[in-house]
Image 1 (cartoon, one colour):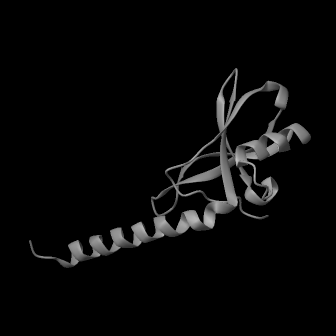
Image 2 (image 1 turned 90 degrees about the vertical axis):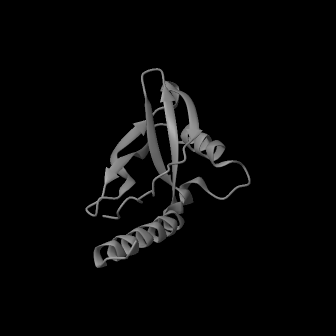
Length: 121
């Protein structure tokens, strides 16, 4: 099989996309995702890692403690989103308030997609 210019461009673009996929999660570590499960529904939310602090306890436990201290807690709901170049990312959708009395469970949530942080306004 000979490499045509189109084939070479395709391979180069795939290699660049793969490299970008490895780099984006390192930048996105500033946002931690959690699945909030209530009696009515489930929602994936993101919170800045700095808000969780850096204690030795698991992140999910620190998130639950933050919710207990600051209920209702306003966070960003995350959903998959297609970027202009066609790549899928986890992106902030809207702000939501979480009330601890409506909550059944909080789980850490790992996205297979890169996570885009909330843009500063």
